[in-house]
Image (cartoon, rainbow, N blue to C red):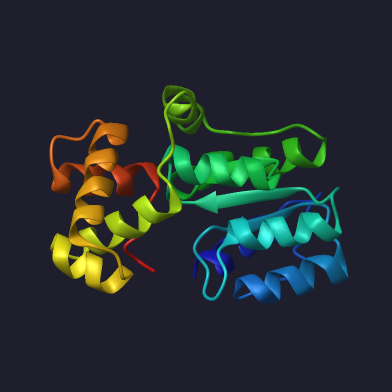
Length: 195
């Protein structure tokens, strides 16, 4: 429905035309590299491969690609990942009605677009130490209600190692407890419970 709505709005613009659509990350790569659109709108949340990984793959083969990430996530982690992947714009779904057309025109003219709320999140956390891949795995399992022993069994590490990871996570996120750490990690985009 979202794709259809966006396509309808864009087709109503005299200077825009929807040239292709894709249903998942792999199809997005194939279509984008074959058609080479002026601007690509890429959802972060897609089946098979997320939009950031698809963006990295596209830009590896076509560095000039102008890609705008469209997402519900304003957390700094996803935004930073997207910017590092080479997106030209970051657009929140909640702002599509007001910013979509102008953002596409900005990106097409060679400018960049990052919403102020997202830029603030990135700036606020830019000096912080990021969670390691293992800490994200641990926290993801904790988010689903697993105790330290269960997390250890699932990751094939000791319970003491899980406790050490949790201690580091709490410190890095400045969280009061496990629940607070999970909440902060979801807000900032370290973990996604929809996967």
